[in-house]
Length: 319
Image (cartoon, rainbow, N blue to C red):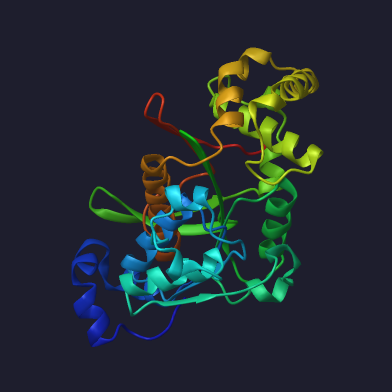
């Protein structure tokens, strides 16, 4: 992400941002390349934020057609069928994002992201995926980690009033201000596969119940061969049985995963726009920090539940 100085046009356009985080951070942003998979409402909010911030390029991947559900939460899709008929979700969102900031190159890549070779990911600095199965999350994260360069990897999921972000910055170095001096810091991140493999019994009792509930739903979808979010209340008996098995295996109480939370995750599969705005805003902020190398990054899970209005950061790593 190192390279040329900002152009006069960039300096003028991003003047206010430069005053906040400095010219070097803005230069890093303007030279960064972001890959985004899964154009749901939360991801639309995220894309809007980073395009306005002035990243170098954003590449969108989502070959699905526009649906009623997508229209309800994704503000990048204009409510005129003539504008999206025959186009994929990525193509429709690409057209809208270009209007937010003409200095950011927004493009579309077609195909199944899980079939893309490792070398495909090398041209990106950040990879953000959503609407993914458990297997796909693991696979894309592994491909990013196989490259010689460090790629910031994020997963984001929003189900009704609940949202989750996972972050993998690998071996990450950054700076932060402490009193009047700048301190250099370093963090080691586990992969997604390693993080969710941490035995539940070694985690602190205060860990968010959403963490455990999301893992149960994720495993249920994986076992049943479902797409992410392809669930209903009819699945509750099987999910409760799986919860019992997972809790027994991990030697934790089933009270860590309340029935009510599982019911909400199974039934509220569409996104709520206000929650999309919050999760997409947090994700955008984290990606900007990762690119600029300034400020404490999130490590390594973030959970939000609109029912209590709380956002929680959980460090799920091997002891």
